[in-house]
Length: 468
Image (tube, rainbow, N blue to C red; front, top):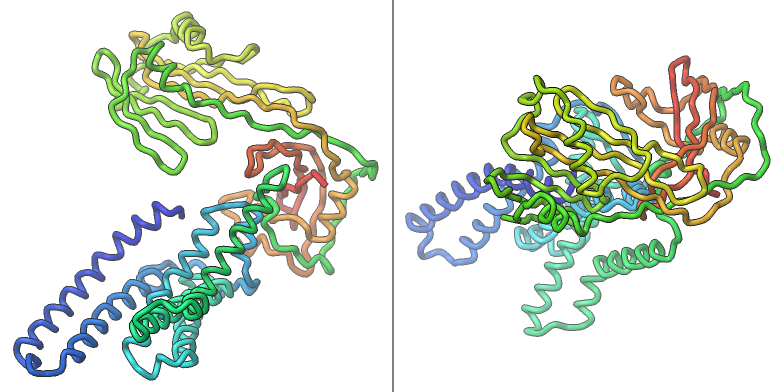
């Protein structure tokens, strides 16, 4: 779930919270005018804080308890900081967002507690409530199957509560002393400052690395002490090398190309992180959506048109070829295939073992019966040779399998998560170890090994980074 999805879900969940707080405020207003006009104002303030606190509790329960499924019965992840480790190994903002969201969710709890009860101004009592609350949620989730008991969640929620408590103490210090004291500021912001320094350090380390990270390295080592691993392959232990490539992205001039060649004009632009979506219009008034990905791909689609309308027409080979030559999108040697609905596809097969720069990918063109474009998608890109690197030998790859240093990949949608857990008595037979390639987080095309065979008699495969 990315940040935009989180915000959309929060907006949906906030509706019942707003209704509850609104009802509470209405009751507080009635209470004030009917009974408490002459009462101390602190009482009304406590009621208002209490009303907001109840709304916050409802919001947290919506996120963690109410309406969740029951597909994770008695599942636990007791590895500390596993979320941060996965985010680092994948270098994934999405993974990190989940960790930070779990921290942010409990910051209000730490802020509210000292307001509600003077006794809870003592750190030990606030922390006890914060820790007990997150422990109760995690325990409920694992017993009911509504979620996985994760030690990371316990740590992050507690950390968020502590940050909230420290923000309260900082505010109380400013109110009491009528100024910001440096000692109080540093002391109460120590945790977020430390986290900020850690994240900055991680980014510096990442920037200094030549290559990026591979998502397949985000795994927990399996215990293979009583697992039978076998192979009939003759595995070479000899050192070997393989090339690494860099994916060259080029989509900055897409709008200019389409405006010049197709006469499309821009009506509106929207940006999603590094991706862009443009609304374009042709001279005849037809509107198109152009999506330009930060990964280098782009697609143009006519709005309100379906390809089925062209299904009864013969493919227009000459028109399609002439149009693609005019757009100058096709590398040499691209293979053309044609479907019956006026869709043409040119493809270049991947050739990562050529030890030189090469093009790969595909471009798809959809034409209407009158020869006009209804869709155009370009995923051609150049893989630029960087250098050769030392890689594991097949024998070393097999040793990694024997040592449990590989990810268990969900190779079939019907496979359950518990079926992928390596346990005593399991049998793995390796039938093939083949060199393949995968893009890393910096856009480098790195060599990997695809290891295939059987796991407890069923087809199985895994992927292992080849570069040493």
